Image (cartoon, rainbow, N blue to C red; front, side, top):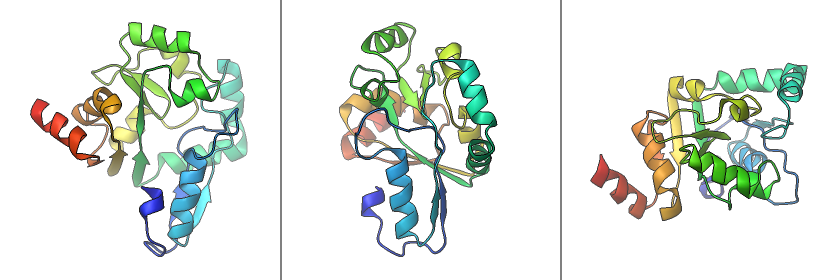
Length: 192
C-alpha cells in the first residue's frame, strides 16, 4: 500500500512506527521501510522505533521502553489519530520466526493456545484476546486497547492464509477501515 501512494498524497505528514521491528536478519522491508516510504511520499517525516519487536526478557523490554528516545516514540504512536497496520497468521512462516524473535515451536504452542495470528506482534485468539500474557509483556509497541481507541485504524490484509486473523481483527473492533482483496472481502461478508 505504501508503494501505491503517489508522491504528494499529503503535506507534512508524520509517520510514527508503532511497534518494534529491528530485524535480526537482512530481510528488506518491514515497518521502518513502510513508515519511511509513506512519510517520504507525504512530504513528511518518519519517526522510527529503534527496538526489536519481541525481547527475551521483560526486564530488557522495560529498560528499552524507559529509554527517552523509545519512550518518546511510543508516546507519539499512542497519540496517533490513525493507525495503519497488517496482521500475520500464527504459522511457522511468521515474520517473527523469520527474524529470530520466535521459533516454529513457539508458533505451534501459540496455535495450541488458540492464537489465530498477531497484530503489532501481539498474538490473539479469535475473540481478540491476548493468548500469552508473558510473551505480550515482552512485546514492544502500542497495545490493542490503543488501536481500538484510535479515531481511525486501517487494516491492510490479503490472501487466504490471513482469513482467520482478518476475521478476528474485523469482528473484534480492531479496525474501522479495511483494505483487502476480493477473496478476503467475500469471505468476511459471508460470515458477518
